[in-house]
Amino acid sequence: MLGAALLSTFHLLALAVGLPGVVMRGRALRRLATDPSAVDDVLFADNLWGLAALAWIGTGLARMLGDFEKGPGFYLSSDSFLVKLGLLGVAMTLELWPMVTFIRWRVKKAKGQPLDTSKARALATVNSVEVGLTVAIPFVASMMARGIGFTWFA
Image 1 (spheres, one colour):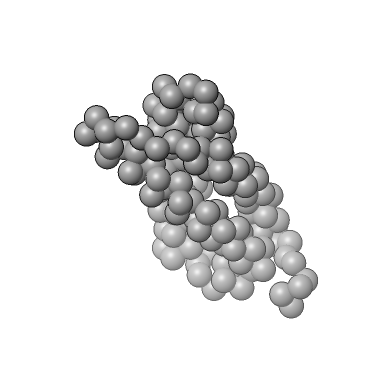
Image 2: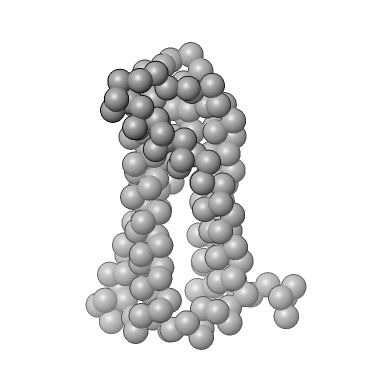
């Protein structure tokens, strides 16, 4: 039971790191249009967002597949879990472009090469959608924990 409690705690604490990280990243991306030094803030916030993502995925998989929680049967038969997983899938798909872009920025920055930040506004828009998804997922998770489902899957 202690293992389940710890996994649940770390799963929730990831929200305390990830949500501020993705909000900070969006603000820094918007500043980047007028302040080139904001790139450091973008990359710092992106590190927080990435750390949270690793924690969410790692603890989530352990909770679903391990002997800590109710097991895969419970999760995969929950409409709320499937909605939560779908929202996570959308967020992960949206994150592909920012992730690749910021990896490229890091590499160029390390080599002292100029960065192409011309897409910062578009990246900020994608980021805003990710903020919305990050806020929506805990609502669906709360429904899942209480056995509330979505009838359109029935």
